Image (tube, rainbow, N blue to C red):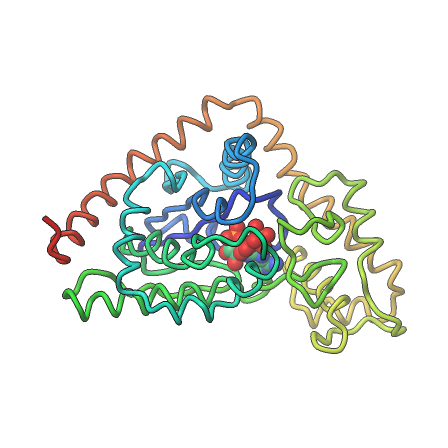
Length: 326
Ligand code: AQP
């Protein structure tokens, strides 16, 4: 199957991005044709630092490799290096109803957050995402829960295009992980963990030091109950921590809940922090190693670009023809 997914170079990747997206990618890479993208064109739809963007892009590629993606098996590329993404985005603009864009949850949240600087690109973001997916005849899109709505829109756009211009696009399906599709903020557990959140205590970055991890988990918001129990609605903070613990220890939430039942919050948090320190250690190590291999990382991105271009050029030629472009 053809698999496509991407991450924006907007900040430091956190465990939510890892559990929601990257962990799924690792499973898919063995028996499928995978395209994993650093989606820089999406990152420029909100205020950003142009000088630092290349560094953030390079850093995301390093995370992909540090997490275990094998560049021999998968295509790793930077979105803006393939112009067909933007061309297809424009073409799909013409078959996307405006009303669909206004009802997207992420648009509503981000346009409120960036009210003063809101640009048309923020509204059109899901069309670019549809272009990313449809350009590669993607069948499966492994993402976290927040992106489900966008993948469903991409499917609708493909369906609409096919019925108007003839069978052209594969209809993509969303794939969410069983656990960890929505990891919550440590400081406001009713909100999702987000890499552009100003309060750094709200998330655990994949490259946080052991000290940072311990401090953040210690200050994570829980509740005033005496026992540790999973209840997503009434007790979002502790439920989030139990979810993180369960994923990292490869056990069910029920099992972890049972084990922690008699323990205090203090002890539970200490054990969780140590588990995070242990499990994230390979990321830190691999990252250090890759930071000194800039040329190697660049080569991988170039290689990915060359492989992706073959697919993208053929697809865009087909789309142009179907749409009657001269
Ligand atoms: N909290 C989360 N839990 C599970 N999965 C998550 N993802 C994001 N946050 C969580 C998944 O990570 C992938 C990459 O996300 P993105 O870069 O496209 O941006 P996003 O979805 O908007 O994520 P962030 O971290 O909140 O970034 P900013 O702050 O820049 O907007 C996606 O598969 C996403 O579902």
